[in-house]
Image (cartoon, rainbow, N blue to C red; front, top):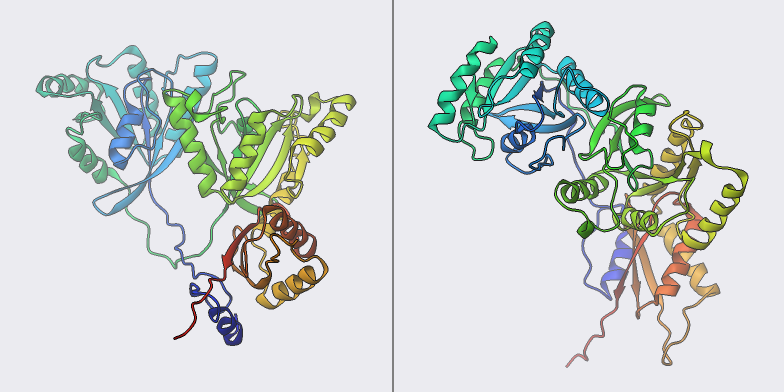
Length: 470
């Protein structure tokens, strides 16, 4: 913004300061190599509760029933100034069958990728045949193992923990994840076996772009992530609601690395969810907030529902880039395709969002997802110079002035774009602009400058009447 333009605005308003481009100054730091600690154990021994205790906050979804955690979920942790990545896993049972066998496979993969294993047992139960089988796998892995004897809530529990010496994995660390008892000693033991910190390197900026996969339960979010990753990264089942925690995965696509975030299916309303589903819904909302683009998956074989439209609205309200992906396209016949077009025309008001038709099951057209995401990111980061914007507004107002209301006609005096990601415009006016006129401005902004795949936010600064000078 030029000095002349800034003076013109300040003649009328009290305005926040902008930088030379009308943009806030942002900074950041690059990624760092940190050791990985896999938290494993049988179902319902308190792994997620222990993860929350180590993190010092409630991140992992916890409920007093086995099997709430199903996938590998990573969190950033810190102890005695040392950063490490904590990977929570589902219950591990090498003899499991069916759905739980896939959950166990995720735990075994976590061990293979980890630098250190934190093996959690329940002292009130002791070592079981399942634990003996897991111990054999841990020994073959050759990874350092720290044994956490959890639920040692009192001195009796600490005494019971000594029986776990029999596993041959070293000294059991008595801990109560629920109450925090012994957690410091456990972390000290973990600290001692963490690999040496990597040599310092030059800081980098940026990082993989963050893409959230969202949608109602059972639309194929986890199947799509597995297809993109080229491996069984997350558990998939016909039962709706398999994913509970958001799951991050780095995926190479189109010559770039992307960070995809698989999320729990969003229920009709948060108040309709209970227990771990309630917290999973909150974490899905948080995943949308930290993403740059949200890919909303829709079941092409089913009519668009109020639930689908609410999820799209959530993404737009969060100011994130948007891609609409109609999954299960292989199940759609010609009649259904025609109905989809009518539903879009009648119900969906985000026709500016890129749309793709895919089949996560077969991989059909999944490669088109990158192009749609890049389109959305481009719109999300579009910047219009102050000169271009005001020339556009001048032509717009001259051709289509705001309607008279009560004998008065509000005018746009000046405009600026103080922010991208998402694009935000600030209009200085002589009066309030009606919602219909603001929608008209948004529509013309898109026609003139693009903004494909991104919401646009328009704010007003109405001139205050100044009193007469004495």
